[in-house]
Amino acid sequence: MVKKTIHEINGRIRDGSVNVVTAEEMVHIVGELGAEDAAKEVDVVTTGTFGAMCSSGVWLNFGHSEPPIKMQKVFLNDVEAYTGVAAVDAFIGATQLSESLGMDYGGAHVIEDLIRGKSIHLHAVSHGTDCYPRKVLDTNLTLEDMNQVIMMNPRNAYQKYNAATNSTKSTIHTYMGSLLPSFGNVTYSGAGVLSPLSNDPDYMTIGTGTRIFLGGAQGYITGQGTQHSSGGGFGTLMVQGDLKKMNPDYIRAANFTGYGTSLYVGMGVPIPILNEQMAQATAVTDAGVTTKILDYGIPSRDRPSLRDVTYEELRSGYVDIDGRDVPTSSLSSFKKSRIIASELKEWIFRGEFFVSLPAERLPKDISAKPMKQTEGIALVSDIMAVSVVTIAKNASVYDAAKTIMDTAFNHLPVVNDDNTLVGIVTAWDISKAVSQNKFDLVEGIMTRKVITATADERVAVVARRLDQNSVSAMPVINKERHVIGMITSDDISKLFARRS
Image (cartoon, rainbow, N blue to C red; front, side):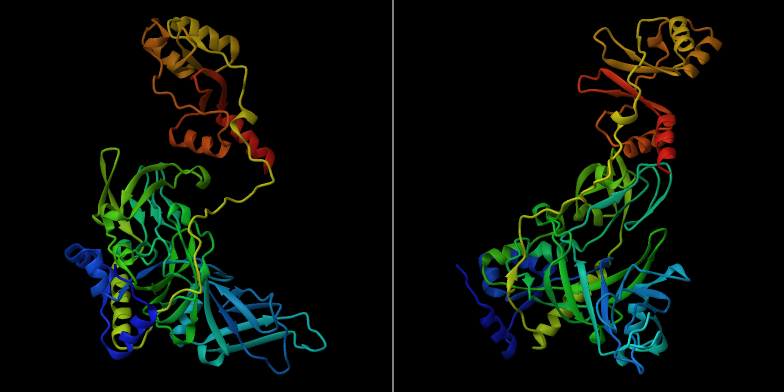
């Protein structure tokens, strides 16, 4: 049984005898030696990830002007920063958009511009007080002109990410990139084999106080990230570091079409190998990291999972969806993730970076909750017609035509002898049959593949399904497939008209 301490490993870093490998290299070492011997051989495994991390931002302290101002609103290159803390402190978020340039420029660009040494324009306004009499301030500042510029990111480095695709007939633009219609592509993010949290899924060495690589400088984990959902394998990290020490190679602004700005953040976490359990954990492969392909064409809370998929499949360039090879593309840079893991490895080799155990480990079995909504959500049962006329499959086309004329229903659910839904016939189907001199049974002209809804579904979800399938009405059925109602596009339009 192997048992090492952080003190021993840091001693080896100091004397130059430490053995550091990347997570990619560790896979082969454990494969050859086994976990126990690998734990004896390796002291530290380095990880890396480089991807869009929207939940990022920077705290800035500008120093006091003369006369002083208590900033009520502040804009950096026309991007508003949050000022509700103290006179000259502000937080600029990566996704905050420019007042004048919109989606072309945002907080992420301000952050990158600062790291690159560019001057930014600060415009501040205030209501004025006795101790802070100034009401307007305009000045130009660089990174070095400010006292503190601390990157503090609420949610970074997801343990893994769901992959995204789109079932609708139109391209949609999301934080997962542009998704082509009719399952035209699959996008994904994350570093798989190099992912920090996938290499320590039980958070044995990752937690509050862990020293990390952040943006090309040393940073720290300050705790669990927002939406930390470790119970489902979607852990996140809250991190911080000194922006003045960061490198623009590892902090890059980005624009996502139709979504806005985001910030690509480079991060690496060193994992000390204290025992064979840690050695085995860091031998995870792309084939061992599984996620789900979700249909982003459906509103988020009801977004269906199409299938499970491994990062090995995603990185192959194609995945199978219903027998089709669908192309995949990554929003992360695996190449850059590999560079980060290698650079962190070199820092440790050179004695410039020491490993640490967390002051507190991350919680292991919690789940992120959806928002509690006190305003009612419209369900199908709220607006469906309950007085529905059906017709038997062995009725004649003439009977169906007469029923439509008598009831003014344009859609007739077709049922069998036990009242189970087996099809649907419309006024158009009947007109077409009459024009072709077909006066046989309804069963011969009905549509057998019926798009249906259930009473407890959200109206927004059903509206999307109507649009996807180019139909204007759906029977509402229960568990026995008995027709209990009908919902139409007109019903939905009237609901939304009342709310607008």
